[in-house]
Image (cartoon, rainbow, N blue to C red; front, top):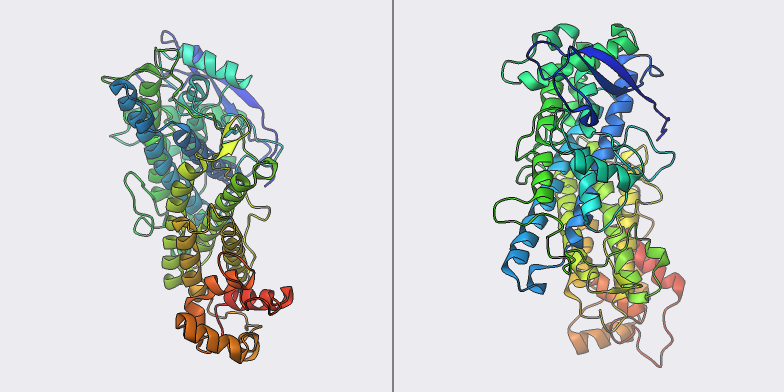
Amino acid sequence: MPAPELEWKAYEISAGAGTAAPRTLEAAGPPAATVRVEIPDLSAFPTPRDKARILLETAAEVEHALLVQYLYAAFSLTTVDKVTDPDEQSALGEWFGVLHRTAREEMGHLMTAQNLLLAIGLPPNLEREDFPPRKDLYPFTLHLEPLTQRSLAKYVVAEAPQDALGVEDIVALATQATGTRVHRVGVIYGMLGIVFSTPAEIAAGEPEHASWNAALFGLMDAAHQQAPAASWHLDDAAIDAASLAFQGTPDDWPGGGVRIHQIADRAAAREAIRDVAEQGEGLTGADADSHFGRFRAMYRGSPGVVPFPPPRGDWVPARAVPTDPQPGEITQPRTRRWAQLADLRYALLLSFIEHYLRTSVEDDRANLASWAINEMFTLGQLAPMLATLPLTGGVAALPFSLPASLHLPATDDERWELQRARTAAAMSHAQEMQADPADADDSTLAGLLETDTARLKLMHGDAAPVPTTSFARDVLPLFRPVDIAHMNDQVGMDLSDIDVVRSSAASISQRMKGLGGRRMPPPPDPPLSDAQIALFDRWVAEGFPP
């Protein structure tokens, strides 16, 4: 995704009588006739749609980046059973809950950002900050890191409203931690509020959202100083109501606190932008249950919960997980295999979400949403597993590496082909892991193989590619009559029955490779060739054609 360097410029705007005009955190102080507000210079984007695009693409990337950072920080915390002090146990439970709950809500914000993109005719965007050069719209450079006071300070400031007071020390630490000023995510949503509103709508405001109204009015003043009003405000024709068939729905992505807005018109867009801002990336206000309010309470402490870090200096709440883990650099073979498995599952999660947003076929959307949610739970299972595995200087963690090819192909047939290939690759990796005696009977691996085998049967489009393999032509001849008789006699498995072979495909593939049990065919007979095994695996990946 193009990432232009954007300069932040300061503008003097009227404070307004009795309004909460926006200002910088560093400029907190007594009211004045005018206040200085900084916004990114978007004059290089000449039309309202151009501005909407750069802001929405950035918003989506920031939501994705914050989501994985918060999850990584949550999973970095040691578990409650590892400490005996009641205050420490209470703090760990509270901190994990705040981070995990906030990450779930960021998922709703991410999906709402995708819906806004679709509504104005743009493709979904599941990128993150990993692609240089970085946009200056990002709050700070993404790092997957254990939870510390310095990382928590960055989260507090990134989520802070413009009128936040009493956080100057947190701002100073966040600036020290990043080496530069931390931008607030709320400015992105404030600018989006301008782009999706007319000047008259901003002037009229919303009766129940006085703080939001005042902030937008002030930002609009700065924006109009930067570029003509005609270059800022979308009209009603910008919204494509037909995109509703592709947008994410709350019913498909349930969960506590996950609010997903569908965008049928500009009014719905304005409501979605304000709701995201008020729940999390607050432009104004300091609701105790906003993301800012929660993180500030973590930092300062709250009734019954010690501040972070706790006063007792010898207790480090976070495990010794790496910063920005790279699976390919892990020297411990078993740890590397589990980290690579996590990345394969993360790639599936992202491809399922994007595919869901690119199709209007109801049954396919239901499957893709369900699979994506299951992959979220899978990553939640893998995180504590990785924390038990050694890494130089500490323990492992979820890498959250973006796949080399992030965006899906143009046609639905090609998308399903990629989904099958990625699923088959994940299955092959899990089967290889089972060759390690330590993981031969691992229930997580067995469950993933069973799940993936079932999914492959459903991975097709309305016009699925013609299979290149056949059970009768290609697979059945792999089994000699003596092999079929032996398996029938020994384990009651009829290899001449396609349904039996389909249900046991993962185990059969594993035994063909000499993994996790007696090789098929057994010694002293020679093993199947690599080409024969690949043929069987391709038949599995193509959905078991008869």
